[in-house]
Length: 280
Picture 1 (cartoon, helix red, strand yellow):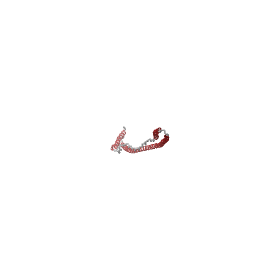
Picture 2 (picture 1 turned 45 degrees about the vertical axis):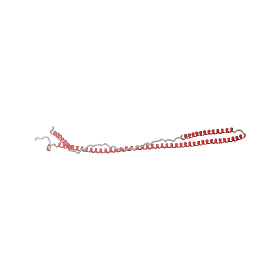
Picture 3 (picture 1 turned 60 degrees about the vertical axis):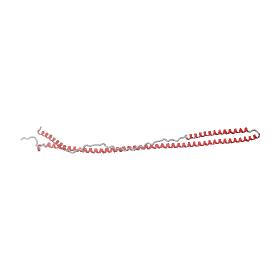
Picture 4 (picture 1 turned 90 degrees about the horizontal axis):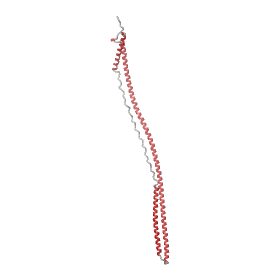
């Protein structure tokens, strides 16, 4: 009885070696798919965690930037406030200096005008006294002249008793009296005009001395403009981000792909085993 070198076939004519290799290949494919799916799930979780951490970090970064900007603006505001207060203090010092100059000049003006008034009164009184003295001198001279006329009148009476004519003496006395009165009136007019001129000159000198020292006009200084308080910095929101959909579990497609790979492996392995058996 002839025998062949072929190994007995398994159940339903399937090669057990090929079945084993196919089962191992199918299991490896299924395990690889499961492992890949788990890796995708873990990658998705990592991406979601990273996205959440990035969003929180961006929000914290925006809040930090806003606080830093507000702190810098507040510091600049206080620096500007200090500079403004220094400028304002300097302006106040200038105003105090102007006030001191105004007070000193006012004192000088008061002293000058008081001296001018005193000089005017002294000069006016001196002129009035001089005018009165001249008038008194004229009155005394006129009285003496009248006295001399009385003496001449007494002499006239003595001459008249001697029988001499008196017309010549009477006319001469009347003429001298008229001349003297005329000269007195002329002199009085001259004195009055001279007194008025002297008084006008005294008034002019008084006004000139009175207005020789004007009051000091203060220079005006404007207060520096106070700095405006800074506005709060608006926090810029983080840009939106997106993560893809979560991967699904091991589906029928992946199971079918693994089974199909196992069948393919079985066919390949079975063909190779058959060639080995037939020696071909």
